Length: 144
Image 1 (tube, rainbow, N blue to C red):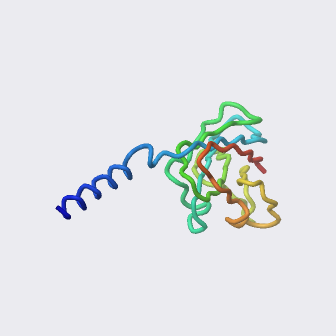
Image 2: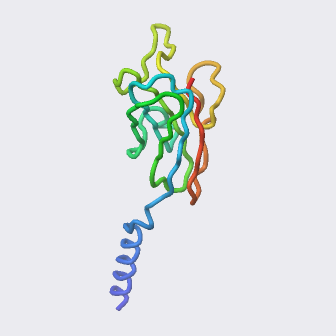
């Protein structure tokens, strides 16, 4: 009888963990301003750790084919509660990376969540983080 109860509890826990309601999160709507050209792609990377920051975005990070300049709105669906950072890259030549000059300066526009001041180099993960709760979130990122 004890084994049966343990088995039933294990099945219940597994079912709850796999249910869409347990894994679904809320969307983040990102308004990206200062898009200078209507060519290329906007890569909107969502990151959940300092280790992966600006290296390996989460799988549901959107890529938007640009058809207009100015302001573009991107949605990152189903983001569970947690701490995150966003990096936006205007990949003008569609090669999937940030192109840099010989001196290491970015040749393509970019932006970060919280719009931190970037005096030199990459901002710290902590300067770009925000907390995602259990309701939809909106933020603005200005490309530099």
